Image 1 (tube, rainbow, N blue to C red):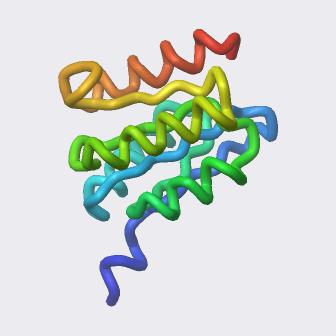
Image 2: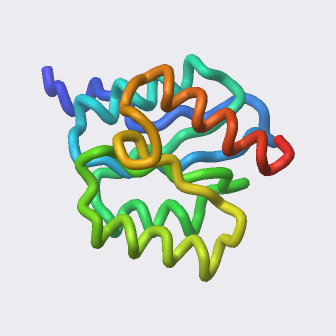
Amino acid sequence: MNLEGMLMMDTVSPDPQAPSLVVFGRTAGRMDEVIRLLRDMGGVSAYGTLTEAEALQRIATVPRLGAVLLGGAVEEAARRRIRDELARHHPGVLTSEPGQQYPYSDENIVADIRAKLGAQGR
């Protein structure tokens, strides 16, 4: 059995008005954990990406983009390009950057996502 096929790379909320998150990380196993964490948080759809190109494509196409989570292993140059893209084409969409903006932990990821989505009136 292919482990890659068993990993969760997205979760779609049954609520069509739920905000969406793009999650850009570098490790498939951790991506699975974060997507499951966001699923369990509820009220959001989350789409995992493992490359910058995938992240930029998802940012451009997901419905109701609410935030972009940049994982701890994402390089600073890629972070800058993602932030620049958001500033140019998605003003008001915030990044959540565990290990950069706040201490890395599952609890802090959930708290930061909730706070950032709440700041947008959700």
